[in-house]
Image (cartoon, rainbow, N blue to C red; front, side, top):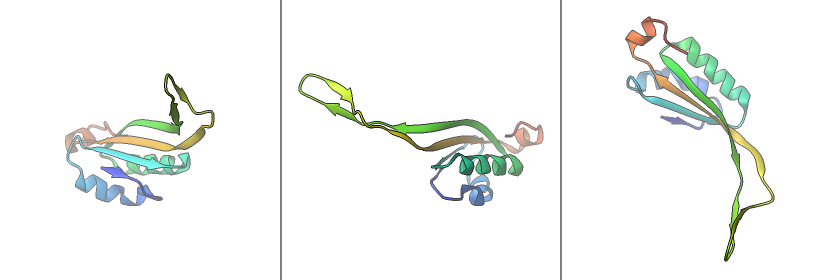
Length: 98
């Protein structure tokens, strides 16, 4: 399940109900504060294992006749990705959550 919402923490309950055990939740947000708030809501809800948080950067490339090079101008920051896995009820009961 991929979330690209300004307030993804508001749908955690629905994501938990919709995902099967082992299902993957990925959220994209431009602010680390949004990702932080989502991670806290996932922790509070139980049933998710936070696997990764990554910053995403974008740099274009120019292809010439005999070479390929990165463009000189780079957008240094474009957003953050959070990945979490839906735990089974048994895993949640043993405390193996976010």
